[in-house]
Image (cartoon, rainbow, N blue to C red; front, side, top):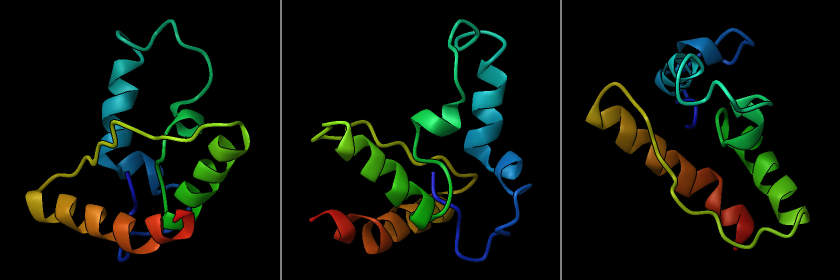
Length: 94
């Protein structure tokens, strides 16, 4: 999930994101056996942070990312996140 452009960029912004809250709730059930933070396994954060995660995956040999899920509180917020990803992340990997 990408931070919206007008969202706070401080280190405490992540816990306010809907995706973060949802994944935190899963730690007590579905994800309780997994080690390592979901922040390291997923594209959560700013376009720059997401781009860096994609570069790490690319360096490890990953050629395809599938199952991108954009979590938001409203449809317009979700569309904004999708547009932001398409505008600021995807062009760096063509």
